[in-house]
Image: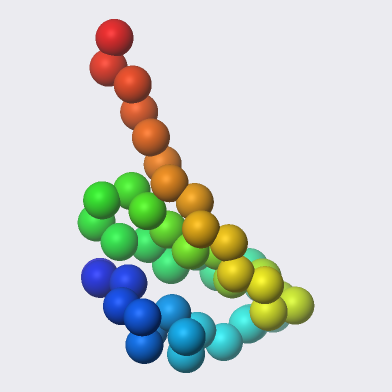
Length: 46
């Protein structure tokens, strides 16, 4: 699922923390209090 600007603005808080992700490792956490945080899942191939 693509995280579009409109989709992110309309994301409403729920009873539990939500994790909305795209197909490339970036995700948005929406807390029950309404806060929104961006995270990026990274892997290193050494």
